[in-house]
Image: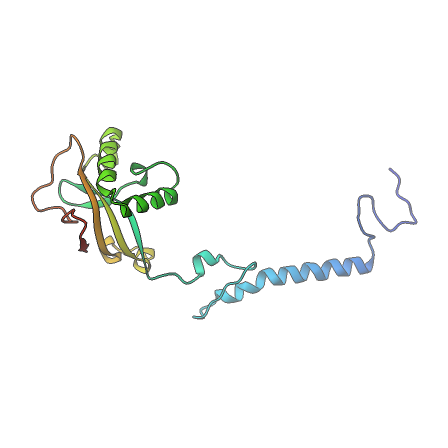
Length: 193
């Protein structure tokens, strides 16, 4: 492949390689790098940090959020009365958010006891080592504070309310010791934690 000496354009180039084209390319590169770097000034210690599209530092994490969220989920109760959240797969298949939406809708429609029975039966069938101590399953709607949760505080510090929508004993497992259920009644009333 021969290169024509009269043409300032190297093979495969779309524009001529001149001092002007190099200057324009340098200015354009500098402008783009500046635009990408400018949002970094918002990362300082100021209290009024703002984000904007398209040059953002993840607004889904830095945008304002509510101080609390309501979440419908499963709570497993062990024989000694301790409680802990159970994996969402005991409630349904699919991704976490899809299952949460379906469960929230079904609980709102009064299907909490049915969901609890289903989850308890599934928990007994799967027999996962981590869940072998669970003797009762509650379907709860909890109100959780975001800041204490994000800071890794204890569950008692970020859980403000638990509303039990359904409860079921896990088939073939021992029963709770009297008076040890930390959530309380399962009649749908709110319990403060």
